[in-house]
Length: 358
Image (tube, rainbow, N blue to C red; front, side, top):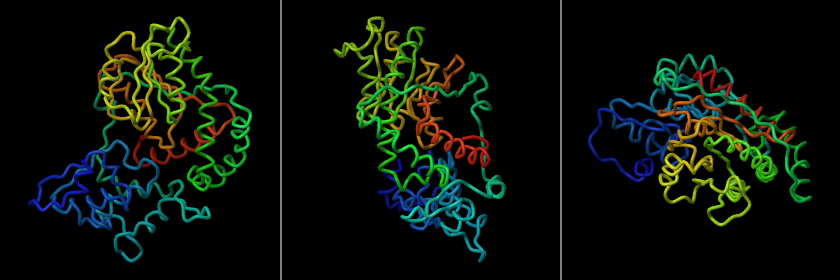
């Protein structure tokens, strides 16, 4: 594990082969695990120095922007990306060449990619890419669509906060991109939470309509407030009486950061016909789980990171799935949802240009 790598001094003899799974976890130069793997300056002096060969495995080589490739290239193939002096490019030199940057008043921030055709040509000889459809030829198709929603009513002050912030968010996104939102992060965090809560009544209505089909559904969200509200609406077996009578026989499975036995929740969803609703927190439940008893995913909230949304969809679109899959992204009309969705599309376009997919 990465934690053990960071704590281990690795005095053992050299290895023939080092395989680094989920290699994007080593994308941050200052992280302890990156230093343990690649050396303090990503100079190849870490654990990789003990291996004759290193293979990096990941479905998301650069989850947010091309700058996240620097640690891997600097440590393993420093000769292929060099600066003006012919030496391996320093981090910010690499960033400025392959990403747009801007000063948000608190320091230099990284925006969308540039010179991507050049970077793609450099890294192509060292990438072996396999898509699901190439390897899993029997896997059914998956479709991504937007689910437009009207917002419910919050308390007056909270509702006003949502729309009061829209002009600031829209201007920042237009002028500086999604990364520019960092300078108003505390405001945006509140805005995102309130926007998500405003969607809850419409989400509950939509879920009720879906469950009438008798099919199972996997729902993902980011904020605990949203998870709790959806949970309360349908978990009648726990003593809640909010759910409509026709859903009193529906059982709910839930996985979030506080879940102690994730597999028990997954097994119940997969094997119990009554358990037709899975509620998961995007980061806690978006990877490592198999939810193929459902073929429909509802993203009540989208992650800032495109790959996290794709990973959540992959909980149902994976080995064992027999049906075509549908992924809905719930968007509150006229809200920050629409602008962030557009920004995520631009971010995904960068990744598709480099790797062919997210």
